[in-house]
Amino acid sequence: MKILNLSFHAVLCSLALAAGRAQTTPVATLPHLEKRGASTQLIVDGKPYLALAGETDNTASSSLEYMDTAWPKLVKMNLNTVLVGIGWDWVEPEEGRYDFILVDGLLAGARKSNLHLIFLWFGSWKNGLSSFVPDWVKADQQRFPRALLKNGKSVEVLTTLSEANLQADTRAYTAFMRHLREMDSGQRTVVMIQLQNEVGLIGDSRDRSAAAEAAFARPVPPELLDYLQKNRVTLWPDLRTLWEAAGAKTAGTWQEVFGASPATDEIFMAWSYARYLEHMTKAGKAEYPLPVFTNTWLVQPQDQGPGDYPSGCPEPLTIDIWKAGAPTIDFNAPDVHLRNFSDWAGRFHRPNNPLFVPESYGDAGGAANAFFGIGQHAAIGYSPFGVNNADRWGEHRPGSNSPASTEIENLPLARAYALLAQMTPLILEAQAKGTIAAAWLNTQFPKQDIPLGNYVVNVDLQRNRRNPVPALGYAIVISVGPDEYFVAGHDVQVTFTPNTPGPEIAGLARVEAGRFVKGQWIPGRRMNGDDVVLEYDQAGAAAKNQSGSGLIFGADGPTVQHVKLYRYR
Ligand code: DGJ
Image: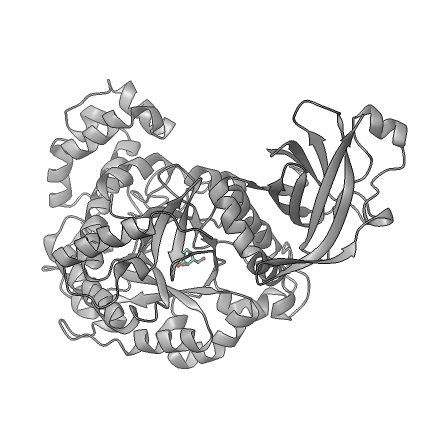
């Protein structure tokens, strides 16, 4: 696979480093993001990388002894990447005394299991709260001031508007990044960093501390106003509407520019968090320039306004504010703990924001999400939350999509990851070429028509079986020639409709089931007869310009098939 612009990237990075700190490993070989054709991909060891990931519980990584029990489960889930937390209080127990024994143990454990890591820096904020800051920070409220709520109460939340808070977290974070450079730039186990976790103020739409009130009364910074003007056409529509409804002003206070509403408070908070994290990101990258992202708590249907969800988090309304305020952060990622995954994936996959999903479901719905994110939105990767508990995911829970099985390797997501791992070279190439798409189906959305290559690929929930129509189906479709596709799917049936001039009906010339080994397609069974016939009503099918045959993917998947089509009338 050709890696575009690598040498240019290498030169740029070497120059950047020469201006910065000494480093033994050339930066071009470090994990980085790269625009490759239609998508932005994570490059690890010089090659595009697809993160088939999982995130552990918040504190699993605070005990190496516990992690010894978890690593084998993570391997059985077919992960190649694990997201693990590092609490500020775990590594700086006394001010200025750092202890990275946990970090080293996690690196060793991951390497032994042949896994990559993404560290989550639980610093000033974890789910909006400042619970992972060291006790010497917690106990000194004078020096490390907190946010104040409308009711006059302070909460266990550091204010964004304190230089002492910012400097203390930055010192610890840069020490951590320096340590990673020293310990890992040779082996490159760590591929990205998540900075903080789900930031934003809970309990009020904005911080009411004296510093925050003063900042809120000041003019909106010119950098943000410039961004709004330069990106007016592509701004998130709700943000643009707010700004334009207030007169699209190019100067003024927050309320003058965006109007007086809780949304303006949220925009102000977003700017404030973004500037704090931008400072930290820059300082961390000066030590060790790994890709950095933030994760976002999504607005829930029952939320009345900012403060019910963390005000200032990079949600769709404020993602442009984050882009303007924190340009060094590589992307903002959604934690999708809601079932309408396809909507959220689309909202976060934007021209200036590649999709990566650090938290979501691990059940059968998670398998569908992984397929959809990676196939339809060129995701860098997918990661269910609480993957260290995968051995319990098979237990039957009411409402769960998981089968009652305790075999980790048979869980829907483990099977989906196994197939995605086989198909990774093809998927990454297709993401760059823009020749990949995906379907995410349920009983509400049982059908999707995907224009791809010379055909519209019609994906339906599988109907060709005696059981009731399945609750869930998913597929990835990759166009590999004018009349040729690879389709990987679960509980779906797939037909093709010509999308270019010529004969109207697509017939199956040849269909193979099979597998990929080291990137090579190894055909297995030739699929025909009952494997492909969807209906024998030939007159009815022909009247719809259909052959009556298609690809059928059962409930035992996901599996992959290779199809060559021909056309007739
Ligand atoms: C979202 C947070 O980001 C995670 O750290 C964890 O607390 C989960 N919620 C719990 O569901």
